Amino acid sequence: MNKFAVNLTTIFTEVPFLERFKKARECGFSYVECQFPYAYSIEEIQMELVRNELSMVLLNLPPGNWSKGDRGLAVDPNRVDEFRSSVMEGIKYATALNVPRIHCMAGIVSEDDKKIANEVFLENLFFAGTEMAKHGLTVLIEPINQNDMPDYFLSDIHQAKDILDTLRLPNVMLQFDFYHMQRIHGNPLTLFQQYANVVGHIQIADVPGRNQPGIGEMDYQSIFQYLHDTYEGYIGLEYTPLGKSQDSFEWLRGGGK
Image (cartoon, rainbow, N blue to C red; front, side, top):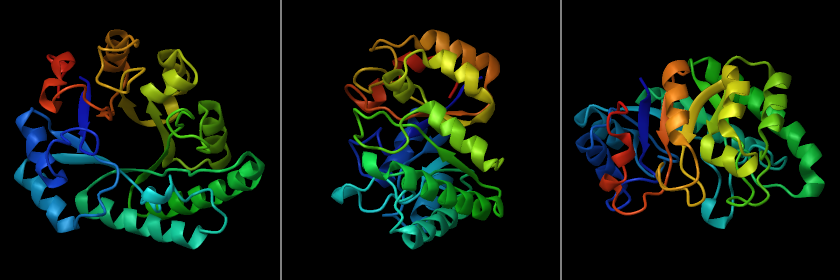
């Protein structure tokens, strides 16, 4: 059965963040994920998870200063100490909230700096993977398409696989977002079949608008059937609802929450 986790950063934005846990439960979900929970205390989030009988399955490391253009710290040679502090902050939240997976955003980089960025990314991922292994946590890296996030360092799944092969850390894996894979490469289901052995988490949205499945160009019926038969992990709903959030789950009826 497909296990869907509603992303509380992108869905239920009609209400403040801490009220979205209740909305998730009211819509029948048992699992949630979010991008950056750090504006809220661990105690506040714990209370909402317990109160609404939810499990959080994914969060992101702190990305730096998002409002000033940061999209992760892991490729910046001048911010290694800041990155390492972000790893410890992520571990603090994940262990307290029983979140098993943490997505490490790479960051923005110019074409001229890509070589050094790759070296720094490998070193930082090795640090993150080693530290998180002490707590039984998995680090995830995710290719993100250049249209949505220009100059994002990690924008190709083959590049991501090369990084994983170089690191050879069993707890550093791929976050496979079908939306980004469709935008970057096309044929996302074929790519998933090729790289399934290194996938630690899945996210979904339809193309082109990054809205709920069923209103774009992607064949999610075939995707969900394949995942139902082969994939045992969680599927994060990281989409922007077209219309009211609670009305955006029509495609999910009978899909298993």
